[in-house]
Length: 481
Image (cartoon, rainbow, N blue to C red; front, top):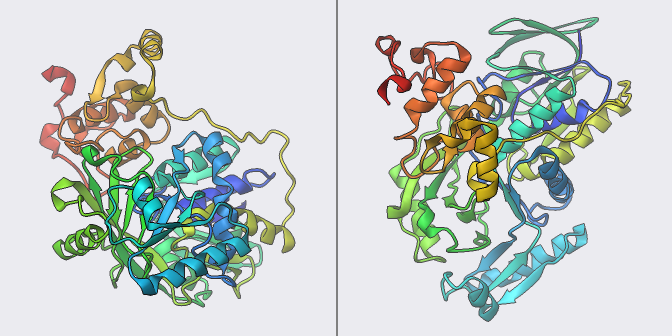
C-alpha cells in the first residue's frame, strides 16, 4: 500500500514526486507514456516566466513569481540547462503603452525585481534586429529558459534516488475506493494507495471522473512551435514577447537554452486531446506575426516543427484542491505559466497534505543533487582528452550535428531512455540540422544492444511508433562500418 500515488509524469507530477520524496512516505508515480515528460511538458516553449504576467488574485499569479525564484537551485542540483536571459515585452502601437505600465506595476506589487520600461532608442541598442516600429518595451531580467524535458528527467531521477517508485507505460483504466484507500487499475497492473494526486494533464478530468470527482473540464489548446537553423543564433539575446491577446501571450521569439532560436506558439482550441499536428496555416500565422517585430526571420530557416497541447480548464486558472472525494486531490488545468509554477505548486500541495493530516517526517538521508549527464561538446580539449582516456566511448561520435558521443547515448540509456526520443531529449542526439538522418540507426543499435531487444521493437516514442520491420532483426551498425 502506497501512502501517496501520483498520476501523471509531466513537470508538475515529477516536481511533486521529488518534493514528497523528502519525507518518510511510500510513493509511486504512474505515467501512461513510455517515459516521463512526453506530453505537454515536452512540447512547450521552455520559458520560466519573469513573474509579472499572470493576473493577481489567481493561482497563476500566486505561483508564477514563487516558482520563478526556485529554478536556480533546481538547475544546480539537477544539472539541467538554465539561463536567465531576461525578456522584452514590446509595444508597437500607442495604445499598447499603458499595458506596459500596468504589467510593471503588477510585477512590482508582487515583488518582481528589475522591471524597467525601455524607450525605443534603448531597445534598438540592445536588440538591433528588432523592427523600428517598436515604440517601447518592458524589460524583465528575471525571465529564463530551460529544456522542460531535461527538468522532468532530473526531477524524477532525484525522486527515484530518494525512494520514489516510477511506473511508466501504465495507463490508468479505472479507480475504485474502499474504506482503506484506492485501487488503481492500469494497463499493466493494480496499485493500492491511501492518497491520490491527480496530475494527469490533458486527461485529468477523465481520471477524476473515475471516482466522480470531475468538478471541472479540460479543454485542449494547441500551440505550434518552429525551430530555426543555428545560423540565426544570436539574432536576439532575450525572450521577445508581443503585447498579448485575449487567448495567449502571442507569438514569441525564444532563444533556447541550447542556442537555436524557436518561434511560436499558436493558440488553437481543439477537441482531440492527442492532436499534435502542425499545419501550413499555423506556420504562416507564426512567421507573419514574428516578421512584424523581427523582419529577418523567415520560414526558410525552419529545421523542424512540433505542436503541443495546453491543458486549459474552464476557469482559465489552475485547479489545486482536495476533491469532494476524500484523499483524492486534483492538480489540473496547469497551462502557462505552469512550467514556471511547477516547483511552487509542489511545495504548496505538500503543505496541503500535511494540513489535511498526512504524517510527513523528513528523511535524514534525503539527497538533493544528482550527477547529471556528461556534455562532450562543452568540454575543453583537455577535458575531452581525459574523458576519452577514462572511457573510449567518448571518442566515438554518434550525432555529428550536435557532437554527441556514444558515451552520452549510453548514459541516457542507463538513466531510463527506452526510445529514440528518450535518448534525444536527454542528450540531444538527433536534434541537429539533419534531424537524426545520420545518427538514428546508430542510436537504435545501441538501444538494441543495451536493452536486449530486437531492432524492430525499438520505437520513436512508444508503441505505435516503430521504426523498422522484423526483417531488419539481424542488422547491426557495427556490421556496416
